[in-house]
Length: 115
Image (tube, rainbow, N blue to C red; front, side, top):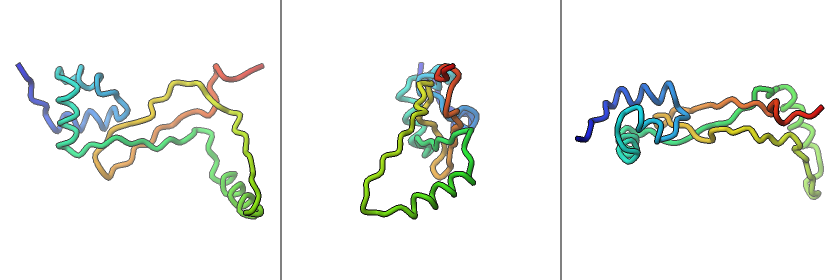
């Protein structure tokens, strides 16, 4: 028999676990993924996430933006981001429409470092 999903409990669940996969939410609520998707739609819970790095430094970013702003615009510049990480990161999260979700990620994982 189908089980009703309590809207307040679903909203509370996504507040605590915004980056859960739908199959994980369905397991917790004992229903199908489609039922969770429909309930999310009715409650206007949308998929989103803004990624931020733990090592982020606003002062250095401001200096960098000023530096690149002073470069001639008619030239092509290549910036090598050699800190590519293979860490598994959940790209999306769920929250009520109009609410932001931030995910913190380290730019370098311990597995990516070399000696």
